[in-house]
Every structure is written in structure tokens, then in C-alpha cells.
Length: 198
Length: 281
Image (cartoon, rainbow over all chains, first blue to last red; front, side, top):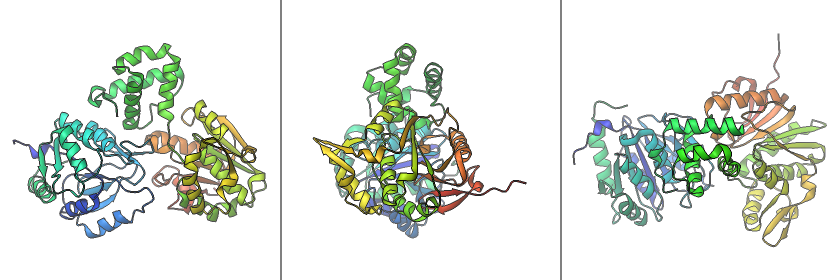
């Protein structure tokens, strides 16, 4: 596959059941200088405190935080959608949070992030769907692929819950179906050393 | 959401469409989050079975029901009673003692949506023994929302969740004493409504209408762009009494806004602020 890695400006990622473990593995491997913003929706109970974000930040090398309203997505930062809110990206790459109805029974919804991020970054976006036991993210990943972005899905055999990767594979026909380790290697090898980013 | 792929609507098309809505109907959504508005428009097109925004644009100036449905889409806000129980708990601790010193308390619940928040507030004030000397102005720009709020009728099935919220918020009674059930509905008691004034007010296009000791506006400004947020903060400053209290949503903040110096913080985590006494020279 012929890919111009230097064109990419952002990564969006979605996970549900089993996601925190997969996300930790991936995020802990990212260097502080990782050039792209990594924006993540993890389905999690609304009443859970933000301590899990703090705990990931404490153990990660890269800076990890909750996405704030109006904040501009920047390289070298991993952003999480706050529990209970949809995370949207404006075309000027700033964040919006909403309390609209659930999408795919979820708020935050992966589809909502992917859909709006596609508007913001178009073909310069990488979308990744990880473990989960629903269909959220499948539609959004198909939009990313249609727009010319890069679509990656975690191997269903490896995922703690295979349904979400399987749904994304069916709907989006992704460029790659990989293990977490392979996704991590792919991103680091191709993006960290690339000279022109942002 | 819908089957309409979002790439087919450009920013300019949306801008033009919002301009038409403003010119024909007076509702101004031009300074709302564009990503949010676009999702709502796509959803509305899907529900109305209209193939393109272009088609909707031609139809909407003379089709009032269609416009009403659109404005409804823009004002949908999912809310609940005692949402964010921590907020109410903190409110009891830091705001109630200040309100207690005021003989007649004027309150503005701006953007009351379907009313869950204003009834939560009424319950809290009642338990703190303050309700009888309060007047709560509950406002929203959408008449349909106001009608729902005024009725105070909610789904019985949600009451279990609300009573858990209520308990976590520091509630002191049996939550079921505040409503009565009829079939599948829970109807809020009349005595909670007696000091509430329902009114249509649009934060985008209307200005000051009274002076308040407390303004609660939670999860409304998350939908606004920065310039509109600044404008509404100015409206709140102009509407607050000296040392009046302002409460925002958990993800909203006065930090980095133009008015932040005019407030002191009563609770950073729960976004409860107090207007500073300003000494004019």
C-alpha cells in the first residue's frame, strides 16, 4: 500500500468493552513528541470519576488529558472525551462537547467523534476502532475511509470483545486489521520520524 | 445518524441556511457550534425526508411547521433531575448560606429546557427553608420546551434514577413526596411551581430583564461559539446583583473569559462563582 504518512494531521480512536486495557497498551507506547493529536472516545459509565484519565496520564510518557470545550487539538497530546458528553471537532480543529441524545446507546459516541473529525481533517485523518461489544464507530470509520483517510481496526481475534471490530470491518472495509502491538508499531515507525507535521 | 453523508454539505451552505432562518424566523443560530448544528440539520433532513439542504432552503421560508421542527432539533437538550449530584451538594454548602442572608431571593434559571433543573432547584430550596421567599424565573427560547417545563410531567420510569441522584445530591426526604404518579407519568407537585415564573427569553437575541441574586445556566453555553459565550457572560454580569451567584455546567468555566476578574470562585470543580463587589473610582 502506498501511503504518504506526512499528510496525516490527527488520529481518532474509539473503544468500548475491554478498551481501557487496549488503550493503555497503545498510549503508553507513544513518545512525548508524538506529532499528531490522538483523540479517543472510550465508552465508560457517566458517573465514573476522571481518575482513570489521570491514572493513564501518570503512567504514560505522552501528555494525556480530558478534551475541553474550545481547546484546539494539538500534536503530542492524547485527548479523552469526558464521560457523559459527546465530543465533536469543529472545522477549526477545536473541541465541542454536547449533551445530545445517545448515539448507538452511547454518549460519548465514537461515530459522533469520527463524523465531525472527518469534516475537520478530511483525508488527513487516521481512524482506529478497537475492542467493544456494539456497533459504534463502524459508520464513522466508513466516513473516514470515504473521505480518503486511513482506516484501521483491531484484529477481532485479539480484541477482548470482537463485535465492534467486526462491525467496523464489515461496514468500512478498513485498510488494515492489526493487533494493538502492530498498530502501535505502525504509527510510531511511520509518524514519529516524519519531518513535516502540523 | 442519517443516510445523508455529511461531506455533501459545505460550511457556506450551512451559513447561508442559518442566515435564512434568522431573517425569516428571528432565531439566530449563527453563533452556535457549527459541528453540532450540522449534525442536527442532517438529522432533521433525515427525519423530514428532505434529500438536500438546497431543497430545504427553498421550502423553509414559507413552511412554518418545517421551521418549528428544525428549531426543535436545535433546542433538544437531554437533561435529568439533580444531574451532577455533586453540583447540588456543593451548592447546598457554598451558595445556600449566602442566599440565606437575602430577604427576597430572585433567581434566574436560564435555558430551563424541559424543567428538570428548575424543579430540582425548587426542591432543594424548599428543604433549605428558602423557597417561600424565592422567585424563580425559568426561561427558554423554545415554547415547546417551556410548555413541557410548565406542565412538570415526566416519565415514571426515570424517577428511580432521579431519586438516586437526589439522594447523592444531599436530599433529605423521600423523593416520591415531590410528585404523584398517574399511569406512566410522574407529575410534579403544584407547591413546587408556585414561585416559578415561566417566560420566553432568548440568550442570543434578548437582553437584561431583571436583576438576580442567583443565575443558573448549566450546559447551555457548551453549544455556543466563543464570541457568543462572551456576550452571554456580559448579559449575566449585567443581570446579577452585587455579589450575585453564577452557576455553570461542569464542563463550562469562567476561566480565560473576559469577565473572569469580576468573579470570585466559590467552587472550582462545580463551577459556582460569586460576583465581586467592584469599587468604582
